[in-house]
Length: 156
Image (cartoon, rainbow, N blue to C red; front, top):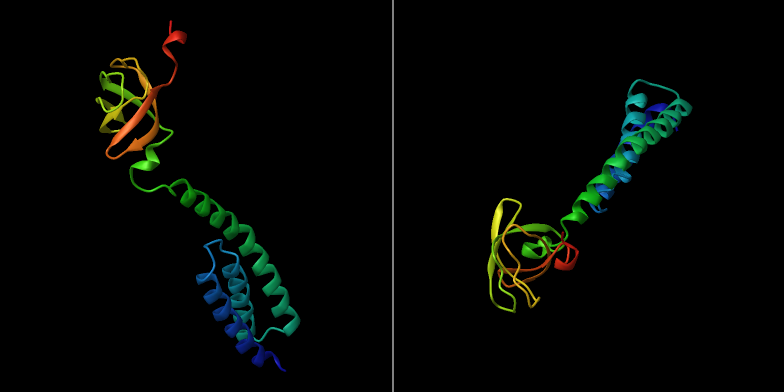
Protein backbone atom coordinates (compact mmCIF):
# COMPACT_ATOMS: atom_id res chain seq x y z
CA UNK A 1 0.00 0.00 0.00
CA UNK A 2 1.60 3.26 -1.05
CA UNK A 3 1.40 6.66 0.61
CA UNK A 4 -1.54 7.81 -1.57
CA UNK A 5 -3.71 4.88 -0.49
CA UNK A 6 -3.26 5.88 3.12
CA UNK A 7 -5.11 9.11 2.38
CA UNK A 8 -8.35 7.13 2.07
CA UNK A 9 -7.61 5.14 5.22
CA UNK A 10 -7.15 8.34 7.22
CA UNK A 11 -10.22 10.03 5.70
CA UNK A 12 -12.47 7.03 6.41
CA UNK A 13 -11.04 6.77 9.93
CA UNK A 14 -11.66 10.49 10.56
CA UNK A 15 -15.28 10.27 9.38
CA UNK A 16 -16.04 7.07 11.32
CA UNK A 17 -14.45 8.41 14.51
CA UNK A 18 -16.26 11.74 14.17
CA UNK A 19 -19.54 9.84 13.79
CA UNK A 20 -18.76 7.76 16.87
CA UNK A 21 -18.28 10.98 18.83
CA UNK A 22 -21.87 11.89 17.97
CA UNK A 23 -23.17 8.75 19.67
CA UNK A 24 -21.01 9.13 22.80
CA UNK A 25 -21.82 11.52 25.65
CA UNK A 26 -19.84 14.64 24.66
CA UNK A 27 -16.56 13.69 26.31
CA UNK A 28 -14.58 14.64 23.18
CA UNK A 29 -12.70 11.34 23.28
CA UNK A 30 -13.42 9.93 19.82
CA UNK A 31 -13.20 13.33 18.15
CA UNK A 32 -9.61 13.54 19.39
CA UNK A 33 -8.78 10.44 17.35
CA UNK A 34 -10.70 11.88 14.41
CA UNK A 35 -8.55 15.02 14.63
CA UNK A 36 -5.41 12.89 14.63
CA UNK A 37 -6.66 10.99 11.57
CA UNK A 38 -7.48 14.28 9.86
CA UNK A 39 -3.95 15.54 10.45
CA UNK A 40 -2.56 12.26 9.14
CA UNK A 41 -4.76 12.63 6.03
CA UNK A 42 -3.31 16.09 5.52
CA UNK A 43 0.18 14.59 5.75
CA UNK A 44 -0.84 11.97 3.17
CA UNK A 45 -2.00 14.73 0.81
CA UNK A 46 1.43 16.32 1.21
CA UNK A 47 2.95 12.93 0.24
CA UNK A 48 4.61 12.27 3.60
CA UNK A 49 5.90 8.78 4.36
CA UNK A 50 3.58 6.29 6.07
CA UNK A 51 5.79 6.33 9.18
CA UNK A 52 5.47 10.12 9.38
CA UNK A 53 1.70 9.90 8.87
CA UNK A 54 1.42 7.43 11.76
CA UNK A 55 3.60 9.67 13.92
CA UNK A 56 1.44 12.69 13.09
CA UNK A 57 -1.66 10.65 13.91
CA UNK A 58 -0.26 9.67 17.32
CA UNK A 59 0.98 13.16 18.20
CA UNK A 60 -2.14 14.89 16.86
CA UNK A 61 -4.42 12.52 18.76
CA UNK A 62 -2.44 12.98 21.97
CA UNK A 63 -2.54 16.76 21.68
CA UNK A 64 -6.28 16.73 20.95
CA UNK A 65 -6.88 14.43 23.93
CA UNK A 66 -4.96 16.79 26.21
CA UNK A 67 -6.99 19.77 25.05
CA UNK A 68 -10.47 18.39 24.32
CA UNK A 69 -11.08 15.76 27.03
CA UNK A 70 -10.82 18.23 29.94
CA UNK A 71 -13.28 20.49 28.13
CA UNK A 72 -15.66 17.54 27.73
CA UNK A 73 -15.41 16.71 31.44
CA UNK A 74 -16.17 20.32 32.39
CA UNK A 75 -19.20 20.33 30.11
CA UNK A 76 -20.41 17.04 31.56
CA UNK A 77 -20.00 18.37 35.11
CA UNK A 78 -21.84 21.58 34.25
CA UNK A 79 -24.61 19.55 32.66
CA UNK A 80 -25.06 17.46 35.80
CA UNK A 81 -25.40 20.61 37.95
CA UNK A 82 -28.64 21.37 36.14
CA UNK A 83 -29.88 17.79 36.24
CA UNK A 84 -32.85 18.83 38.39
CA UNK A 85 -35.66 20.34 36.40
CA UNK A 86 -38.21 22.95 37.30
CA UNK A 87 -38.54 24.28 40.82
CA UNK A 88 -36.86 21.20 42.33
CA UNK A 89 -33.48 22.68 41.40
CA UNK A 90 -34.07 25.32 44.10
CA UNK A 91 -33.66 22.74 46.89
CA UNK A 92 -30.50 23.40 48.87
CA UNK A 93 -30.29 27.09 48.01
CA UNK A 94 -30.55 29.98 50.47
CA UNK A 95 -33.34 32.58 50.38
CA UNK A 96 -34.28 35.66 52.44
CA UNK A 97 -37.70 36.03 54.04
CA UNK A 98 -39.54 39.14 52.78
CA UNK A 99 -42.86 38.60 54.59
CA UNK A 100 -43.03 36.54 57.81
CA UNK A 101 -43.80 32.85 57.36
CA UNK A 102 -46.35 31.65 59.94
CA UNK A 103 -45.58 28.42 61.76
CA UNK A 104 -47.57 25.44 60.62
CA UNK A 105 -48.07 23.73 57.35
CA UNK A 106 -49.91 25.47 54.48
CA UNK A 107 -49.55 29.00 55.94
CA UNK A 108 -47.38 30.99 53.57
CA UNK A 109 -45.09 33.96 53.63
CA UNK A 110 -42.85 35.39 50.94
CA UNK A 111 -39.15 34.79 50.26
CA UNK A 112 -36.65 36.10 47.71
CA UNK A 113 -34.49 33.46 46.09
CA UNK A 114 -31.91 35.08 43.88
CA UNK A 115 -34.02 37.58 41.89
CA UNK A 116 -37.37 35.81 42.20
CA UNK A 117 -40.05 35.99 44.86
CA UNK A 118 -41.67 32.75 45.99
CA UNK A 119 -44.46 31.85 48.37
CA UNK A 120 -42.94 29.81 51.14
CA UNK A 121 -44.06 27.69 54.06
CA UNK A 122 -42.29 25.96 56.91
CA UNK A 123 -42.80 22.74 58.81
CA UNK A 124 -41.62 24.45 62.01
CA UNK A 125 -44.11 25.49 64.67
CA UNK A 126 -42.62 28.98 65.02
CA UNK A 127 -42.88 32.07 62.83
CA UNK A 128 -39.89 32.87 60.63
CA UNK A 129 -39.47 36.64 60.68
CA UNK A 130 -38.70 38.92 57.72
CA UNK A 131 -34.99 39.29 57.03
CA UNK A 132 -34.13 35.75 58.15
CA UNK A 133 -31.98 33.63 55.86
CA UNK A 134 -33.59 30.27 55.15
CA UNK A 135 -32.59 27.11 53.33
CA UNK A 136 -34.96 25.64 50.77
CA UNK A 137 -35.54 22.04 51.90
CA UNK A 138 -38.33 21.00 49.52
CA UNK A 139 -40.82 22.17 46.93
CA UNK A 140 -44.56 21.57 47.29
CA UNK A 141 -46.46 22.59 44.20
CA UNK A 142 -45.55 26.22 43.61
CA UNK A 143 -44.35 26.86 47.18
CA UNK A 144 -40.94 26.45 48.70
CA UNK A 145 -40.60 24.69 52.04
CA UNK A 146 -37.93 26.48 54.07
CA UNK A 147 -36.09 26.23 57.38
CA UNK A 148 -33.93 28.87 59.07
CA UNK A 149 -30.23 28.64 58.20
CA UNK A 150 -29.44 28.82 61.93
CA UNK A 151 -31.94 27.71 64.54
CA UNK A 152 -33.32 30.54 66.70
CA UNK A 153 -31.51 29.21 69.79
CA UNK A 154 -28.15 29.90 68.14
CA UNK A 155 -28.95 33.49 67.13
CA UNK A 156 -27.40 36.26 69.18
